[in-house]
Image (cartoon, rainbow over all chains, first blue to last red; front, top):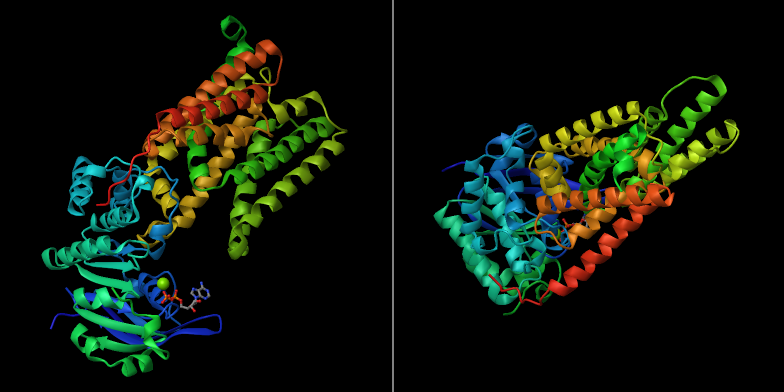
Length: 251
Length: 282
Ligand SMILES: Nc1ncnc2c1ncn2[C@@H]1O[C@H](COP(=O)(O)OP(=O)(O)O)[C@@H](O)[C@H]1O
Ligand SMILES: [Mg+2]
C-alpha cells in the first residue's frame, strides 16, 4: 500500500491548560477525500494548524509526504483554504487574477518576477475552478461561493498533492454547496489531489467523502462513510459526548 | 504661474522633491491603508519630529551640524523597529504599540525643544511643511531615498502584496512574514522622514493615506489602485505646492486640502457611475 500523505502519531496539544487534542493517531491515504467532522470547538482547526506548522505539538509527531514535519520544505505541495477566507477584508481591491497569482509568490521565490508561463498557468487555474469570466473583477464584488473558488485556485496554481479546506461552505447556500462539492470531487478524481475537508455538515460530507474522521478532543471514529452511516444515534452520542442533533444538519 | 518655481533654485528643489514624495508617499500608503496601519504612519511621524528636534538641539547648543533630515530618519527607523518589538510583546493587543511610540515621540520632541530654548521658525516649518526649506543637499538625499524605495518595492512587490492580503496564507506558503513586515515598516519610516520637509509632521500621514482612500473607490485591482494613488498624490502635491506658495500658506495645509477635494470627487464620481448590479452565483 502507498504511504499516506499525512500521518499523526500520538499527537497531543493544549492551549495553556486546556487540552484540545489528546493522543491523536490518524493518517490520510494518498488520493483519498477525507472528511474531518466534529462539533464546534472539537479541535479540527487546531489539528490543521498543527499539520501546517503554525503551532507545534506538545507530544507526538507528524509526518508530511513521508518526512517529519519539522524537516518538511515542500510547502507548495500542500494547499490550504482557511476558515477565515470567507471573512477576509472585502475592501482589499485585488482582482481574481491577482489573488490567484499570490499562490505562486513563495514558489517563484524572492527577487524573481512572474513569467508569461506563470501567467498562463494562473489563467488556466482560474478556468479550472470555473471563474474565468471574473478574472479581472475585484474579489470583494463576488459572492461567498465564488470567493471560495478563487481561494481554491490560489492553492491549486501550485499543483498541490494535498488540499486542505477548513469549513469552506459556511455562509454558502445549499445549491452552491452542491456545486462546490462537485468541484472538489473533480479535483479528487480527475486530478488525483488528496483532499482534507473540515466541516460540521455531516450530511453532505458522507455523500462525497471517501474517508471520514470524527474528532472531539480524541479521535472518535476513522473509517468509511458507510460505516459512519451505520452508527446508531446512541453510538454517535457516545462519540461526541452529547446528543448528536446538535451537529447534524437536515436537508 | 509656474515661472517662480523654475527661476529660483530653492523653489526648484522644493518642487522636484515634492514630485518625488508625491510618488513614494502614496506608494507606501497603498500597503499602509490595506493593512489598516494608518495610525502607524502618525506614530512614526511624531518619532521623526523627535529626531529633528534632537538635531536642532545639537546644532543650537553644541554647533554639531547633523542635518535634521538624517536625525529624523534615524529616529524614525529606530521607532519603527521598536514598534515591531512592542507588537511582539503585546501579541493580543498589537495596536497598543502605536500610542506608546507616538506619545514617546511627542515627549522626546518636547524635551529637546525646550532644551534648545523653545520653538523657532525652523521647527514650525517641520510641523506644517515649507516651500523654502529644501536645500540642494536635502533634495539629493531624498532623491536617493526615493530611488531606493521604488527599487525595493519593485523587488519585493509580490511578497508585500501577498502578505498584505492574507498574512496567514503567506506564512503557511513559506514567505518570511516577519522579515518582510520589518522591511515594509522601515521603508515607511524612510518615506515619512523624506516627506516631512514639505508636508510637515502633522500631515504626512494624510499624503500617504488620502490619495489611496480616493483611488480605492475607483480602481480595479491592487496595481491599478497603486498607480491611481500616485496620480492623485502628484496632483495634490503640485496644486498644493503652487497654491501654498502664492497664498503664503504652509504647503502641508494646501496639499492635504487638495487631497481631501480629490477624495470627495472620487466619492461623488463613484456614486454617479455606480449601477446596482446583481452578482451572479457561479
Ligand atoms: N488561540 C487559541 N487560544 C486558546 N484557545 C483556543 C485557541 N484557538 C482555539 N482554542 C480553543 O481550542 C478548542 C478547539 O478549537 P478549534 O480547533 O478551533 O475547534 P474547531 O475548529 O473544531 O471548531 C476550542 O475550545 C477553542 O476555544
Ligand atoms: Mg474551526
